[in-house]
Length: 88
Image (cartoon, rainbow, N blue to C red; front, top):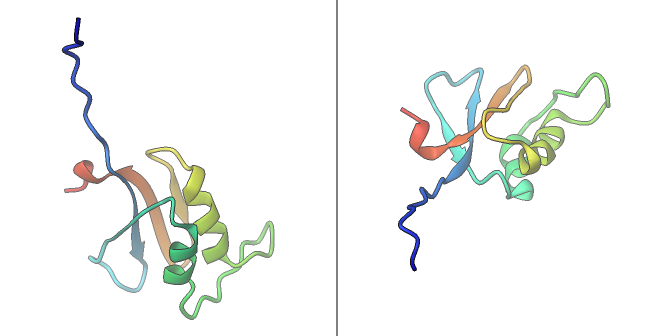
């Protein structure tokens, strides 16, 4: 017997906004660590205080394993892991 349960496919995204560009939202694939690092790394000067690692590198590796609802914040940008359908 076939199951009648329907599953909703979620498209998980890393929603990125920059402090100096209010109103713009960039949706990135959270699994594409290399692209996220390149995207965030333009003229990046932030360093994580705890690790001394550039914030863009820390954020790009964080995205890969972050669950829906997690938020990464730096002085220059913020990333929220979310379902694309939840963005309004």
